[in-house]
Length: 493
Image (tube, rainbow, N blue to C red; front, side, top):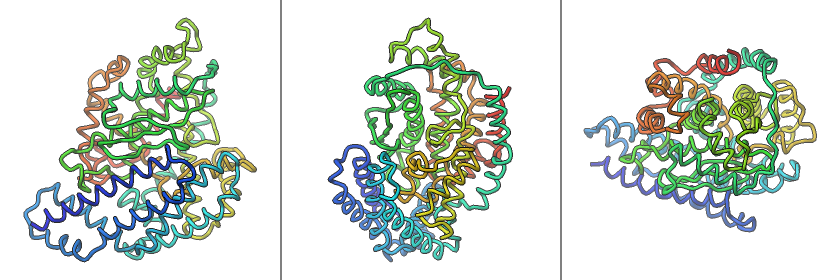
C-alpha cells in the first residue's frame, strides 16, 4: 500500500525531529557558550535534511495515491497531517529554512547572555535579521495557503487558527478583566512574607517530588535548568527545565508544575501512533491548556495547597506552627494578584493582558508597521496601557524577558491565553465527570484526574483539531465564559 510507504518515510522524519529536539534541549540547558555557532550550523543542517525529506514529488504522489486506499479514521487523519507538513515544506525554500534556523539559534544564544545585562542594542541586529526572515517565511506560507501573513504564522502553531478567531476572545477579555482585577485587588488579603534563602538543591528536590506525585515518568524524562523554562524532547524522553530564584521558591515550583502539565501531555500521547504525525501533540493552544490546567486550575486550588503544604514545609524546614507556613498563607501567596512586569510570573487574572500586549506588537512586527529598533518604546507604551507600568530603561523586564521573538516564535503568544480559556472549560468538565475531585487532590491522589486527561485529551493525538476536540469534550465551543466564571468563583465569591 502507498500508505505504508508514507508511514515508513514519516517514521524516519520523526527520528530526525527526535534528534533535533535533543540538540535544542542541550543548547538551552547544558551546552557551553562556545559551542553556539557550531550548534547553530548543525541544527540548520538537520532542519534542511528534514525539509528535503518532506518536499519531494514522491511524497505528493504517495499522498494522492492514498485516496483510493481503504484507510480507517486514524490513518486518514495521519495522511491529512502528512499533507499539511508537505504543503508547509513546499511553501518555504530550503535556503530560507536553513537561514532562518541559523539566525534564530544565534539570536537566542545571544539573548541568553545579554538579557541579564539589559543590553537590547547588543542583540538588535540579530533580532532584526530574525524578524526579516520571519516576514519572508510568512510571505511564502501566506501565498501558498491563501492567508494573511500573520494568519500564516498563527497556523503553524495552532492549525486553522485565524485572527478572526482570536480578536473576539481577546476583546471580551479586555472588556471584563480590568474591572475584575480592580475588584480582586480591593478584596485581596495581605500575605505573610516567607523569607529565604531557598537553596537550588532543596527547590529541585521539591519540584521532582511534585512532578512524581502528579504522574511524571522519570524513566522517560528529567528536570534541568535553563534561562527560560520549557518542556521539550519527545514522549519517550521528555525534558523539563526551570530556573531558580533563591529568594522565592514559588516561582520555580509553579514553573515546574506548569511544565509538568506539558510533559504529562507528551508522555500520554497514543503509543500506537508515536512515530507518526497524527500521534503528535495537538496545536499549541491545546498544549498550553494542559500546562495551565495543571498549574492554574489544579495546583492553585485550596485542595492542592492542603496536600502540598506539609511537603513544602519539610523541603525548607518550615515550622508547622508558624502562620507563614500555613495552608491559608501559602494559598494567599499562590493566588496573589498584582500588575507586574514578568509574564511567566503573572497571576492568572493579569496574565492575558501580557499576552494581548505581545499579540498587538508581533502583528505590527510582521506587517512591517513596527521596526525592531522601536520595540522597547512600543513595549513601554503597551505596558503602560494594559498594566499601568513603565519599562523605560528596563528592557530585561520588558521586551527582552521572553525568548520567543529572539528564537523566531512569532505568532505563538495567542496560544497561551487560548490555552487558559480551554483549561477553564476542561476543568469544569473534569469536575463534573470525576466524583469528589477536590478530596482526591487534597489527598495527593491524581490518578483519576490524569486518567481523565489521558482519555479525553492526551490519547487523541491529532485525530481532531483543537477547536472540535474542546467542543467534543466540554459540549461548547472555546469561549471566555468558563474563564470569567472561574475568576469570579476563585477571587470574588
